[in-house]
Image (tube, rainbow, N blue to C red):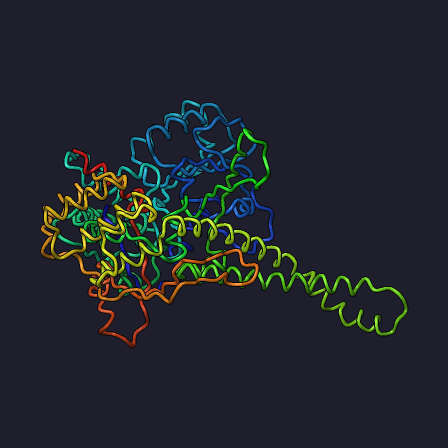
Length: 591
């Protein structure tokens, strides 16, 4: 997997804002969307494929779509009824299958007019197929606009994007590192990555300076991307980097730096157990495109003996930039998050009690002068409290959301002793002495799952200066096998380490480590939702990972301490958690 980190001078608008503006313009029939326009929107239908759905869902809510005039949003390949008096906006990849279905829609006269928007550039031959279908169906006048949108990437945060979600196995770490991959397959993988990166820079409105490591997949991507950018710039009339997309002088003076690095530069970090809120949610829960899915038991009730257990309810929560608690605490250590949730809950209860108190005062009866003066004093307070009710209800919704999510994370931490794993892995990566042998942790039946044990050992194997002797390795293998581990990932890492000659020069992870601040051997507050007893309160220290150091050296941040800080965007060809990465390593390690 070639991971991309683009560092730019602080931009006026984040990539999230730019992609959102591009989507809103598209939904407004490719006319710039005016925020405070009082006119009624034109009601329309949105037709997308899975790729389009993945791009839109992290950026626009159903309410925002409705505000843009979208009454229905349907998948292209679903069964759709004709709505002959409504325009349709299509947002799809220009694949053969999609083009055929769009031609079928034209023949069936499903909609009043068609606004065709392609996520990536459509080829001339496929465009001719649509034109022929429109001619045959006598629907030429109904095809109102055809646009290449260049939006083939998914923005998850202001400073983070991924290249694809659908068919992500096509650009996965395993796909690029398979020993039996053909040249044609590798070209397809590289073209897919380059197309998405090209779309990213078209949306950003900037031509990058490209840096990469030599002799890796990253270099192949860099060469192809450079060629594609040059070809586009050469065609002055049709260049995507001139005119409206670039401000005056931006091309000359604000070119971003694109750093392309291969995942092989740092294999330990994706396996590392984490301790911050967002990273833990991604590692232990079903977290996908900013949405977390939880299984909740439907309440504990005394069921008769032999009765079928109650089904678990599935709930989904969106963790978006609109969620202020998430934005503030996603990078915080987990114990801090648990404490903050409790504080927010107490603050909410205090506000709720105040409203109830005011209500009871307003209900006073009789002609008592004291009561009447108290009534008039509190009328303004109650009016203010009532006007803040929607805000209070939203606050309660977010508290409930994070209580449920944090409780689910805490269950995993306790059941798998993730605090212990995190602390030991930090010590291994920073070359600090362990207070308990690795073999003891692997052999402990109460500490973690087989996958946790394998992750720990792989980090040790990757990070160690001197590979363990064959006798020691056999001892570790036996302990891992006894713990129920699949040894295929280790087999692959052994081959990888031998091939890349990493044994003599493993990646350095800095000398910092975490410091335990003692056990939180108490319930944080009376009535707290989070019983943190036995969980270590670990303080995070900043670590310079290999990618961070590469970026620092290239940007020469230290040479200009007085200048404004840089705006860094992080991207990856696929987003996976440790479980998915272990699975890929296991497939690569199969004989």
